[in-house]
Image 1 (cartoon, rainbow, N blue to C red):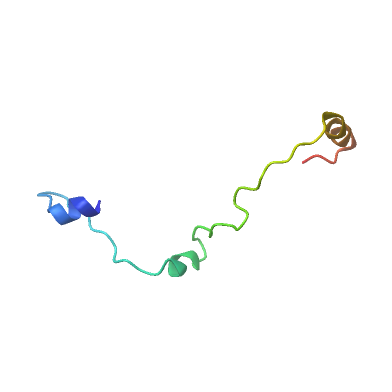
Image 2 (image 1 turned 90 degrees about the horizontal axis):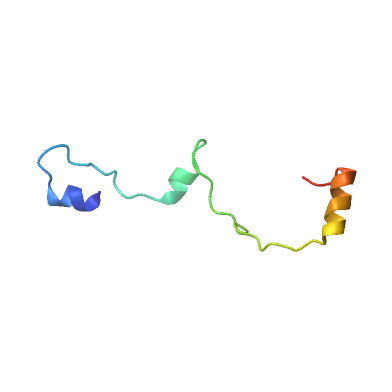
Length: 61
């Protein structure tokens, strides 16, 4: 979009907002959340029998 704006299209040129501090946008009430420190936790392996037993007991999410 910036390249289109800089090139100066004839019709309907995109107009970008000025660059600002991302903390301002992330602090708003309806803003997207910051990345978590544990965004993609490493998976874990569970024995099938233990998983099946936990499911029968209702402990599995």
